[in-house]
Length: 401
Image 1: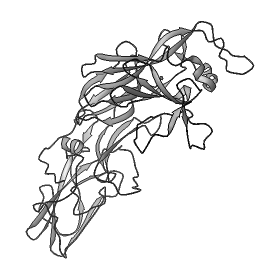
Image 2 (image 1 turned 90 degrees about the vertical axis):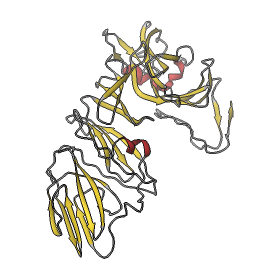
Image 3 (image 1 turned 45 degrees about the vertical axis):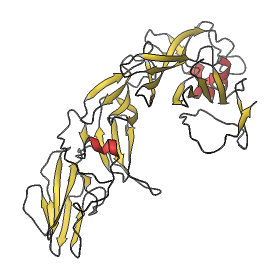
């Protein structure tokens, strides 16, 4: 795919920055082919530029650099009839130390000319505190983007960074809160769950942020009723979202103990949280709900009761609440099924949307809905699993017990 970028985007508000390729980079997953107009200068001329990432290649037009801040300066070696221009500076040749003269997060241009051929390369200067990274490609990959969100240590602020298929940062933002599960949405915006470090379903400020590529906060996605859980924001083809939450309720936990000797058993009127899924439209209205109450029994928590009873959550009212299900991931399957992964039951469930019934289960304690898995040598199918995603790889080889 050939891309001619006309859009120019200046410094972003707050701490966000966007590489000059603009919105079309995210939407089109930019290709790196060249048309006749954009062919790189070639021939016997010698052109080498150090201090750019990825390493300078005449055929690649977009780069980032630390621009000398805590790193080696940008240095060019140009000879045999080639010339370079930095910004609006004059053409130069020979050994050149490049001082872009722009602020962190801003762009500058390097133009390379050989005879009548001229090519412009865009470079964005990384912020001084941009985290270090290492990228290794383990196989052939096509043009595309991927997102990471992380905090290097407790004392450092978090980052959300979009990288391209060569490991070059294309977009970054450093929010004031923790950032979890960042992703690019179908309209080219970027989302992540903001967190306040106090667990899931506890703080009413919890939400999934949706931001434009200029860093502007466009909206907050929250569940209707209970506080949203930050684990999952699953975008559907119609623009709606599947999200999870934790709903407080009361249960008798006296038969569930942290130890086989029946020491440290649960209270008679315990506060617990059940897992709930909601489908939200673009306006935040709940179109569909499903709750684990009445569908996933407390017995299915099994071996996790020791951990659950030892680690209650302190809710806003100060009452300790227990989390026997702990939903991690939600995945649509066809038009009438949703698949969920729940850590504290060691299981994955298939839920029929129209009836709310569980139609199959993999892993965990056996129930009437459990599937028998054939050909797997593992004695324990799942254990504290997190993500669940549907992949069609061949004929199904499972049947009901």
